[in-house]
Image (cartoon, rainbow, N blue to C red; front, top):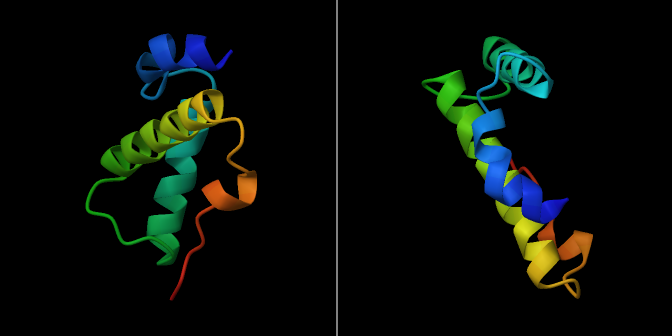
Length: 76
């Protein structure tokens, strides 16, 4: 599954169906609430989606990396 997503996943980040519209809505709601400060929600969605694909690739290439090591934490 990881290999499929890495090869074909980028085209789905901006799809008008599936999770992409809901993810964009979530980013837009985060901006509206002040939780996120991004100039363009679509660019933020691209960064989030591509980052997720990169983490899946890391897990595929390095199964020894634990979820805790790959987890990002937000600081204020």
